[in-house]
Structures are given as C-alpha cells and as structure tokens.
Image (cartoon, rainbow, N blue to C red; front, side, top):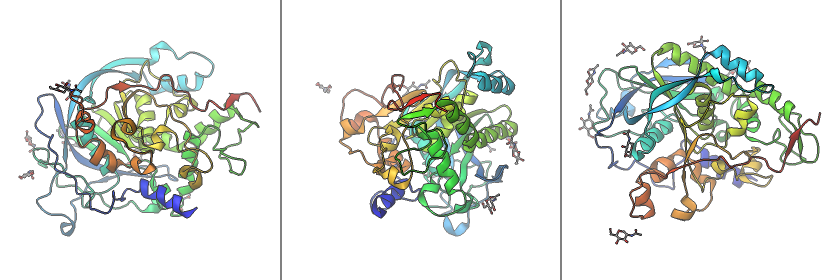
Length: 432
Ligand SMILES: *[C@@H]1O[C@H](CO)[C@@H](O)[C@H](O)[C@H]1NC(C)=O
Ligand SMILES: *[C@@H]1O[C@H](CO)[C@@H](O)[C@H](O)[C@H]1NC(C)=O
Ligand SMILES: *[C@@H]1O[C@H](CO)[C@@H](O)[C@H](O)[C@H]1NC(C)=O
Ligand SMILES: *[C@@H]1O[C@H](CO)[C@@H](O)[C@H](O)[C@H]1NC(C)=O
Ligand SMILES: *[C@@H]1O[C@H](CO)[C@@H](O)[C@H](O)[C@H]1NC(C)=O
Ligand SMILES: *[C@@H]1O[C@H](CO)[C@@H](O)[C@H](O)[C@H]1NC(C)=O
Ligand SMILES: *[C@@H]1O[C@H](CO)[C@@H](O)[C@H](O)[C@H]1NC(C)=O
C-alpha cells in the first residue's frame, strides 16, 4: 500500500525533483524579442485562501531575504505574445446566476452572453506556453526558492517594483485555493495562476483541510460521489444501486460542496475590483487547471490549463450555462499523464489506493494534446503529471524538434474532446 501512495505523492509534489540531478532550468534558447504584441508582468500579489475561511487574503509582495537570493537574479518579469480573440462574457452576474439556476428547466437565454474582443495568450507560440507553464509552476513556490523559474534577459526587467518574493503564509494546514497574481506593468492584464489543491495530496495527514480538499476532488472528478467500490465511503448519497446514479442529487451535492469553485469566483471578483479595466487571464496546473477552466467558462476569460483532469462533467453539474463556445480555453496535456487522460481509475489504481476517484476525462475548449506515448515513447506514468515535466521536457523545445519531424510545428494543432463521453458505464436519472 505504502509504495504506490508515495509514488503518487512524489509525482505531485511541488518540490519533487525529476530524478536525482538538480533541475536547474535549462538555458532558454527561444526567448528572443518577439515581433508580435507582447506584455510583461510582475508578480504583484500572493493569494492564499484557507478552504475553511470565507475571506481572501491578498499579501503585497515583499523583497526576498537577501541571504536566499543572489542580487543579480531579479528575473521576475514574464513576457508573453498575445493575439486578439472573440470571447463571450455574461451580460451581468445576475443574468448569469439566473441562467445557472434555471438552466435545468429552460434553454440558456441568448442575451446572456455579450461578445467581446480581447487580447489573449497566443497558444500557437511554444514560447508563450512555456512562459505560462513557468508562471504556473512558480505558483507552487517562492522567488527565493531554487525551484522558482528565473527568466533570462530581456524578460528580467524589474523596474518599478522591488524584486518580489512570497511571504510564506503558506503553512500546510492553511492549504486550500492558492495562487499568484501577476500584473502587467500598465495594469492592463492580470494573470491569475492557480495552484489548486495538490498539497492536500502531498502532505497526507497534514492539516485540517485535507479531507475537504479530497471531498472537493472526489466531488468534481468522480462519476458518482466517488463510489469506486463497495467498500468506499462515498462523498454524497446519490448512488442508486447497480451502476445507477441520481442526477438531481448529484447536481445538488456538487453545487453545495464545490467550495473551491465559489472561492475562485470570489477571487475573480476581487481582482476585477482591484483592476477594473484589466483583462484577466487564468492559468493553472492539475486541479488548479480545472478550476481555471471552470472560472474561464464562467467569466469568458482566456485560460491555459496544464494537465488538468477532465472538468466538463463538473461544469455541467455546476450548471454553468456555458458560453456559445469555449475557444478561449486551451488545455495543454499529454497522453502519458493518467490524471489528465482520466485513466488513473479503479480501486487498485494509484489514485484509487490514495482514495481519489479521478474518473472524468473530457475537457472543455481547445486542446493542445501532446501524444508523448506515440511520438516520444513515454510510458503512461503518473510521474509525468508534474508541472516541472511540462516546463523542462514537454515545452522545452518545439514539438517538431522533440519528435524529429521536418515540418515546423511549435506546438500540436488544436484538438478537442467533443466526442468524448464521461462515465459511460453509469446510468444517470431519477433513482431517489
Ligand atoms: C502566434 O504564434 C505563432 C507561432 O509563433 C506565430 O506564427 C503567429 O504569428 C502568432 N500570432 C500572433 C497574432 O502574433
Ligand atoms: C537580465 O539578465 C541579464 C543576463 O541574463 C543581465 O545581464 C541583466 O543585467 C539583467 N537585467 C536586469 C534588469 O537585472
Ligand atoms: C520600465 O522599463 C520600460 C522599458 O524597458 C519603460 O518603458 C518603463 O517606463 C519603465 N517603467 C518604470 C516605472 O520605470
Ligand atoms: C480553519 O483553519 C485554521 C487553520 O488554517 C484553523 O486554525 C481553524 O480552527 C479552522 N476553522 C474552522 C472553523 O475549522
Ligand atoms: C497600477 O495599479 C497600482 C495599484 O494596484 C497603482 O499603484 C499603479 O500606479 C498603477 N499603475 C498604472 C500604470 O496605472
Ligand atoms: C475581496 O477581498 C477582501 C479582503 O481583501 C474580502 O474582505 C472581500 O470579501 C473579498 N471580496 C470578494 C468579492 O471576494
Ligand atoms: C525532410 O526534409 C528533407 C529536405 O528538406 C526532405 O528531403 C525529406 O524528405 C523530409 N523528410 C520528411 C519526413 O518530410
């Protein structure tokens, strides 16, 4: 029992090292000045939200302790290529919530969504995805730590802000919805980088919120209240016997228990209050990526999610009305990652042994699906799930270079999960 659990924890650990060598970030050959529109960001806020508290803490970023950081390492600015996209925003929060509560009964009203042209990250650009992945990875650490990704010149300008670091109010027992907020120098674009809930998996047994985190995970990503086997204690009482699950019961339970989604909505509203004219982007890894996607679908904000478990089922159960399309959401994932592929399932899987029912596998929006199994001969392995694998291997070079193909292809073409079906072996209906 113990071995697979540690295997899982190691894979998800924010401090986990790939192999035994220190993963000093490799020199980045591609960060050359770009012709297209670009934005540069500074780390401005750290956000920490205890899962059991109702308030959000913003901490202004403070200079790092001088002992832990070399003075010539101020690489805390990120630059990204942008492209203009058409997205859809709710016409008002009231209209959105009305549609959300009514969508069981009626069609979503057409006038709920207002089209809007906004700058979004250029996800065709590998260097943009790479930078966003580093920002996402940095959400797990602090600028004074060795696993913080520095960025080379000319993206290391720190004018205007002191070199930031993260005050470590991140005790394991305060774990919950966490992240960093990066703000562009002109306050026009804000990137919310969501760490998600993985610490709850890692420091198993540490802290009062672990069981709540697990409840959230099992609620959002399982087919029926995490009823994986007869001996599992379920997270809601919707099981209707022999492969049947009560749909209305599920929807009520998910809406009630998914506090991380609600916390994310609050956070988003807080950011719009602080930066009323800003474009807000959402990025995240793993569960943080799923949350970023759910929030992006709610607010029409651009999303780049890395290795997120399938979140489409959760969006349906949360009654998110869903904009006319989710083209503003981009998933970056690869086929050897059992969590993103939704194959870490069953009582005897690594996830099952750790008590997680990560059964959903369908994603919303567009997918940059890296077929690492076919093209790079990677074996399906939960250790490939970590964000550092994405930063240091998957996005470290153009896809055609990694695969040895002639044709220039910085990143895989868009794919989608439109034909994907979740939980096909369950029947959902009125069983209560
Ligand atoms: C997006 O990135 C791709 C790949 O680098 C590039 O070809 C394209 O021109 C970029 N689009 C914009 C609008 O800059
Ligand atoms: C950025 O990094 C380069 C080396 O990569 C260094 O020469 C330059 O001084 C740095 N700039 C700032 C503002 O720190
Ligand atoms: C920061 O540097 C950029 C050029 O690199 C300049 O345009 C901008 O005005 C500077 N901002 C401040 C606050 O000095
Ligand atoms: C909330 O969590 C904190 C630790 O982060 C703990 O001290 C406090 O007792 C908890 N409150 C409730 C109501 O569980
Ligand atoms: C950006 O917002 C901060 C407050 O969050 C403010 O101090 C600063 O002056 C603003 N900068 C610009 C260029 O508007
Ligand atoms: C925003 O954050 C403040 C604390 O800085 C908190 O009191 C407030 O409730 C939050 N608002 C929302 C909408 O989350
Ligand atoms: C790769 O490029 C070379 C020369 O440009 C060409 O001869 C060869 O057929 C190409 N290979 C593939 C697999 O496209």
